Length: 287
Ligand SMILES: NC(=O)c1ccc[n+]([C@@H]2O[C@H](COP(=O)([O-])OP(=O)(O)OC[C@H]3O[C@@H](n4cnc5c(N)ncnc54)[C@H](O)[C@@H]3O)[C@@H](O)[C@H]2O)c1
Image (cartoon, rainbow, N blue to C red):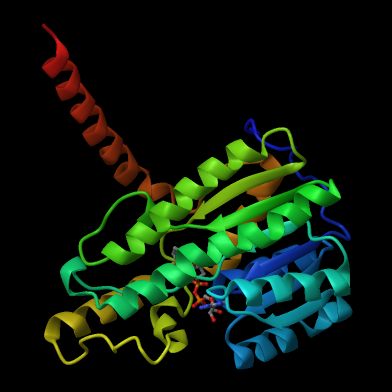
């Protein structure tokens, strides 16, 4: 069922998608799904060797694939990647602000450099993508769609995941605002909120700047948390399944794209707690 936002995008053939964090995991799978739907695809990523591997793996799609090095924390880098993509393929129709990283730890122990890195990629990366691409996508007037990658971690706070949850809650909120702002245009917006997906996300520190100190690997708690995240991801759904959900969600103009129906209870519990808080407010106001 389509929601009340920009026109739904139905026709993917010969359209162009631009995917940040496109060299691996969910972003790479999105690229493959879009290519299979007949699109041209630009995979933008900070990790050059992973981009090379991605290009090789998608060799069968030939000149419909382009890879670009791009750091989403850097607005100028995003703008340069947009210009290079347009120069090669023309108008961009689907933007996936998908690059993301994770860092854990209790809120009062996370070092400022780790906060800056995480928010720089997960939140500012999305903001830079929207700032640089939305004017172009509105301007060309053709049907298009924006998919921001959030997470189920954006639907609730979790102990030990404060920075990540905060960044993803912000992405959910930004996308809700964006969808309202795009009403009446030829563009729609979705936020992808997966549960665990089997990617190398648990190793996202591989892209951290040197200033970000390593996690406390020598503590038993730190080692257990890292092992737990790895295990959860290894039991996650395949990235291709998440990507296929995204394609269907774009077609349907869905604002929220979920991949894990079994996590519904978590969101409903939160609503119940919010509802109870409103009940208290009502009781407080009552004469
Ligand atoms: N894997 C999961 O269980 C899961 C669950 C929910 C949400 N997500 C989200 O999905 C998205 C994709 O993650 P994934 O699981 O595919 O992990 P991944 O590590 O395989 O992919 C993330 C990609 O982002 C790139 N990247 C990191 N920093 C960047 C930067 N500054 N600029 C450009 N690219 C950068 C990495 O090089 C990598 O290719 C992330 O936003 C993540 O938060 C993942």
